[in-house]
Image (cartoon, rainbow, N blue to C red; front, side):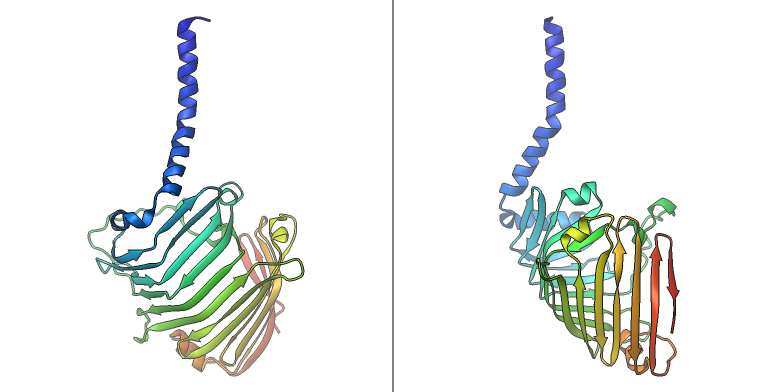
Length: 297
């Protein structure tokens, strides 16, 4: 074999291997580096690529192999310009671990574990920055729920979550407090369970849900079962049905009842009319491009 041809083959092999070597080196850096020792760098990157000022950050954890994981023991930041809707954010502990390959190749978001402890999120009515460039409308980039991946949560735990929105039309802020919420992993004899309780402004609420197994979630031809029961003060809702993630189809039968909307609309800070005590049942059919309410009784 001619020396020139050998050199060409070696060059092509090296060229093909370069992205693989760089990817391996990047993974080694991500997984070996103690990111908590580089808090200043992480805070600098957050501030560089956003309009937020990091007031405090500690306990940084980052990992990436077949699963991606990231977390902090504490973070506090605020918006510097005042134009963003997110005014400030603070948490005691945040951790997220998810599967990488299903998100890349099957459009499925599989959350292995999620922890949120002692979080406070303050939102305000967003203001227009006069110096910001005017974005052109792009129909292809518009957001719709249909573009979201199908989501399966294996385990989650939320404690002492506080959400405040100060941009209501009534002047008083909307407040949501989740005292505790959790999703437990499904077992052979038990479905995946959701439990949550807290307060919506001054009204107590409770949510209980049951969902299908991970095998049912992965089966593209199967109808994934789900049931959610919610109670806010004296209002109750019971929704039960199935979801076909691949086809974008779902069907739910819903029962709802309550004593009227006076207290509920005050808690939600909505300017809507009142209705008398109600009790109704209806079906919800969702197709990729349309949602239909049927059999209203």
